[in-house]
Length: 342
Figure 1: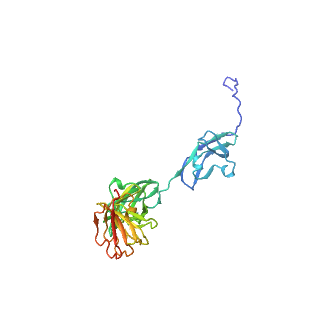
Figure 2 (figure 1 turned 135 degrees about the vertical axis):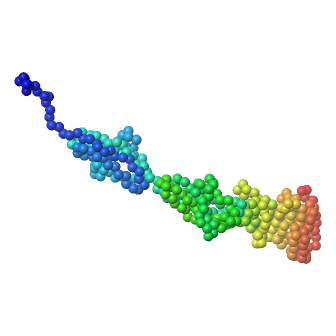
Figure 3 (figure 1 turned 135 degrees about the horizontal axis):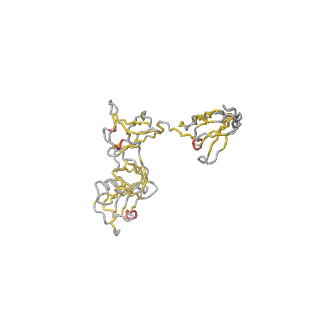
């Protein structure tokens, strides 16, 4: 009613249910695998909550039907599968309206830990020994060494600042210990177990009926350890190839020919020699076994003590008969030389 007595009327209004409003959004979380990822939403005038997930980066959403997903707070186990999804909450107001929270996700936290310790490494002087450590959540690596009775010292070279290190083997380093100092993304530090350089295990291989062994004190020399006793003739070369590396044949084990009854040829810097005959034949034609080689020498003691041998044929390429080559061959009465064309 106005001062002048006239009357006006306001618009008509009514009582309505209060609007639902989200006052605190859920936040994405980083959780270790196997832990619980907890999301919380806070809303005013809310009547109900239903959490949803999306498998396609938020294009479509599916509601959880379980009772545990009908609360303002939800806990989901952190796995690779759950970390691949997005989550949001559908909040229903007391007036029946619906609002949706922001979409959030799970990031799996990589724990800072050593998952694979280094092991003792084989090495020979002049070569390298490789040590490897595997860690998750690591920011940097520094390999360290310790002399007998000393303290740990970090190498400063870039070559020692990786998860894998190649240590040059020297006589002094063979008595040292080695470990890796690892700094995590969070600044904390872990140390690997201590390891050392050890003598390499015996490596043997077979080429052309001969078993060789790589010498422990050398990376380029081998010894003849045994031979295939089923073949009538063995040819020992000066060098042998194994896994693309050439090795010098520098020695023969004392028992390499145990049980063998054939003939052995060996290559020297001068040429091929008849190294040893183990057979018991009375008549021997050496030229039948040459297989294309040129024989220049009957080696020292090659036939010594062979009393079964009565006659022998050798190629005319022979230039030298070694000391005591036929000593005590008491029944040998004939030796002929023939041309082989080699």
